[in-house]
Image 1: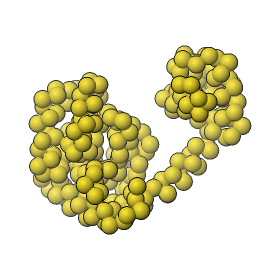
Image 2: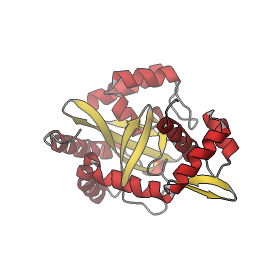
Image 3: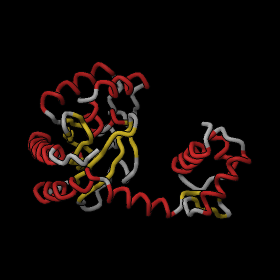
Image 4: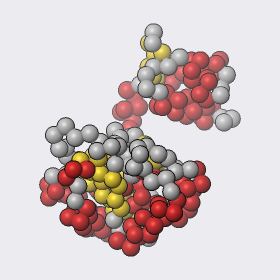
Amino acid sequence: MGTSLSKGISVLGALADAAEPVSLGDIAATTGLPKSSVHRIVVELRNAGIVESSSNGHSLGLRLFELGGTALRQNQIVGAARPYMEELYDRTQRVIQLAILQGTDAMYLVRVGRQGHQLVASHIGGRIPATCTAVGKAILAFDDGLLETAIAEGLARRTKYSMVDPALLRAALAETRRTGIAVELEEARTGLACVASPLIVDGHVRAALSLTMPVSTFDPRALGPAVRTTALRLSKALSTNRTIS
């Protein structure tokens, strides 16, 4: 990474991956940047409110939270999807999620609804290997290039149920292409199941909608058509909005 911007992004990535505040030395070790460069970048980011520093180390600042919220409000897919997600939640009383792919990871953008104290596989803004999630599979099924990249990188094992055999994954995604429905059973988090359907806008897969719930109450035959119908309606609405990039 040669530019100041790319170095700053590298530092932010190291902070985002850390579970707690980290030292300049830890950031330098993670990014491969000289400690002097890391110090300069952290000072600049701290002055902008993007990084916070304490006696325990350095972490992401609340300015990023503000920027992230603005980015979500400005994202046209998110804005268009929310009413459909709320309607789907009202019909099913299941947690509804919207995700996109970042590289070969699924990143969750919006969540609607809750079921008591149900756990989820990832927080909003979090990333999980796409092949371990229904939303990721729903997208990969319609993007051969990303699928081959994910397989070449090696299929991740998040739980003992994660699909790590490329042949099994290809077979599952062939079924998803046929039905428009992807299923995940405890592959991202033990005890959770998910069913998802892609958002295809003007012939290109852009995101996916999902329903998630405890595996003990999972019924894909009942819930799959509900999420599929909503995804088709939302895809049509997005395809008529030519301002979406």
